[in-house]
Length: 271
Image (cartoon, rainbow, N blue to C red; front, side, top):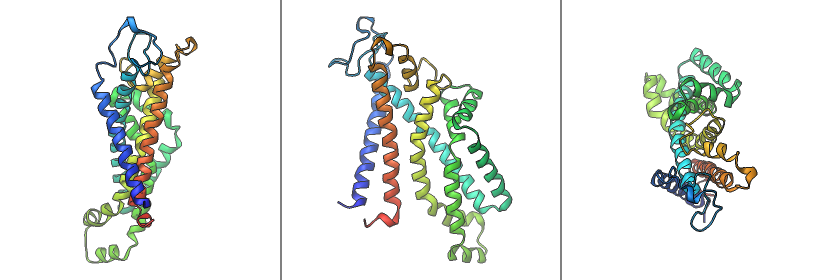
């Protein structure tokens, strides 16, 4: 089996699992918040694979629902952040030195502030919740991808066919639409997928700290924060299963990005 085939299988497998988690979270939306005080604090068993919490809520349903919320928010915020990176990266490389200097300053400014602190400030300023967290992640995760796209466009600008097109009087918009965007599209797609695990982890982090999604939503961050009060009582399953599956989901996003990178890298096609 070639490298390309293995990468394709890995990409499809990762995306299938993530899709299954997302669909499962939608299907278990009601079960995730349903209480049954006659079945509280039950350890993992056949009836409750992930156990139940102090209110008798099914931890399997809550974990799936929490992961689905994280995946949905991660997709939205990563897509918006990648879009910002694409626009700024192309603008910095194409619109002249002054624009490049301003965008480079913004990149250094955002990277110079502790990431989680900036994310919390933006999220709180926008009122927390799904919208606040999504915008906060989108506004704090674009710099690295912007640098990659900017470097690709600068290198592309020196290509002979770009220089010929400029001498023929083609507009910058024509060059961007016909040459630049198709060239940077693989890097853009890979960068977008690789933003997902960061978005998911940071959403869970700010929610765990109390600055993210509301406490009445079964987000993984809320589940982990609530479980801290019960670990000393021996209810280890309240934190272990959500934490393990959060790690699996972020790892699958990362694996999907790496496999997509291999598929879009011409040097690996014939490996």
